[in-house]
Length: 220
Image (cartoon, rainbow, N blue to C red):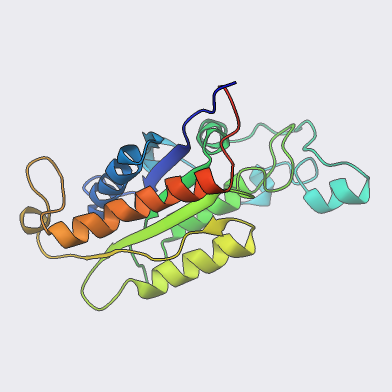
């Protein structure tokens, strides 16, 4: 059987239509493609999620502690329908071997929308095991921020993901915000060659880590 290419999911932690971080994420995706990956770039705004609330989610069917206590290991049937956006975005995370995330910094950390996403995808759909969409995923993080900031958002997001069992690649590129035309050319590529290389390298490193760890499996 032939080994398939690594599957890398790329997205920004911002919902804004003209987000700088969405442009940076697309540059990171180019690095992953050049390294031989099958890449999907998604926009979180296309997968609307409510603020996580256990009243909107069947917390009994999706509670890993209760399942473990009962000797089970997979999510059971849900009495309440799961948010439609969640079911669609879970398919994206289930497909991926690794992610590249470009995050802005909000109030000294990563955005609420990004944390809300993690809150939701850690909740089990029927048939899922605890943290199925998080464990053994390789993650690269970059950030587009105003000068002098960004490291806190990256550090906090990396801490969260390693706590949940993901493997975060070392190194993170930071892109400083000036004006859109100064930062990106007509094709959306980062004008500063060194910065572009650092961002693309993050995508490439995720691919290489997935390959070294043997996470791609075989076939489709």
